[in-house]
Amino acid sequence: MRLFVANLRYSVTAAELMEHFESYGDVVSARIGRDHETGQSRGFGFVRMRHHDEAVEAIRHLDGSELHGRRVAVAMAREREQHTA
Image (cartoon, rainbow, N blue to C red):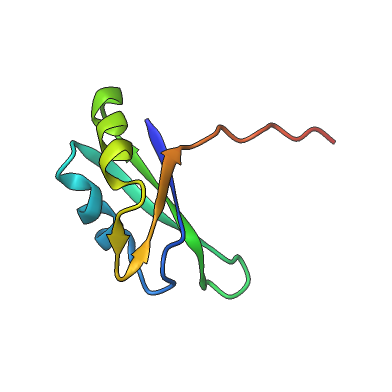
């Protein structure tokens, strides 16, 4: 299950994001959203957890938690819409 994490400090790394979630279950991956031109963090990220029930528990406990002094918002990620040209 993929989770969306908002309000991240620009200095947060994918490893730190992964570590923040690991106590709630098996984290498969963590990724920080970056600007395509500058490579600068955009202040959000995605965490993929292996099991649905662990992801739900992580949302319950980590939504509103602090990471590097900022309260982060955690929710289920919406799937991207397919764009047709």
